[in-house]
Image (cartoon, rainbow, N blue to C red):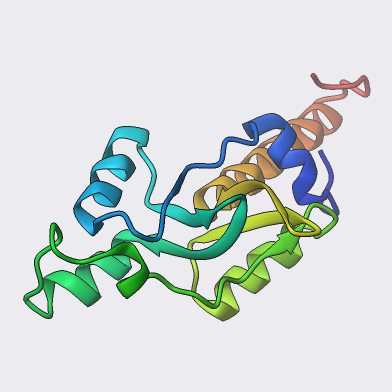
Amino acid sequence: MKATAKIGSLLGEKGGSVWSVAPSASVFDAIAEMAEKGVGALLVMSDGQLLGIISERDYTRKVILKGHSSKDTRVDEIMTADVVTATAEETVEGAMRLMTERRIRHLPVVEGERVVGVLSIGDLVKWTISLHEETIAHLTSYISGGYGVVG
């Protein structure tokens, strides 16, 4: 594990599951799908094309706070259409910077027009913690005289 790792390697470890919903689906159905999958956002896709993203944040700000009904509101009415994406070649550090600057929690990873996975800020934080733990283990081994590889 390196500080310059590409996010494609994280997808390889995490798996490339892509959970999506149709733009015509009700927000209620989208929220139910998020709950079932244990995720905080779904990609909005039609015929393999990325059209947007809908998150729990969209739901709370654009449905609940405005007094709308989740069963009567369509996903495409509240989704974020300007989706920030990255390629698998983006570094973990670059992805974290992008997500922080754009204030997003989910980052679709694309190859051309095809979505190959989605990373959450939690995935990137987990990776960073693992990197730090690995570094600490190596330093601890070095300090205690164990110059071998820690695994």
